[in-house]
Image: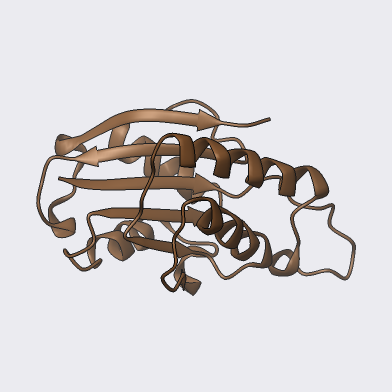
Length: 159
């Protein structure tokens, strides 16, 4: 069994004309959302073997906050592919995860995360900021993940 958590970063700050999208921070509300989600995930006993996040400032901070609540003391992998990723790049990134990882926690951006959730579990709802999906795959290798062996276990949101 392989478990994938897909998280869209919380609310980002307002963009200023000269500020690059990559460098946008979390808003104050977004920081509160991240802490609230961290508490929820801790209560749900989420224990990822690996956290992978986009290196954008807002996802980096999100990953650091979430990792504290989940007592994740390993290195967070910041993967540039996750920033402005195409769906096939996300699936490839997940598929190439070492099979010693049973629970993978992915933190990234829309629209690619919404496309990923739709592809695996036909999730059609709006993938709002600070939403986390838990998907279990009935297989033993990440290379074998597919919509045919995927099950949506739960969806968590904070406003």
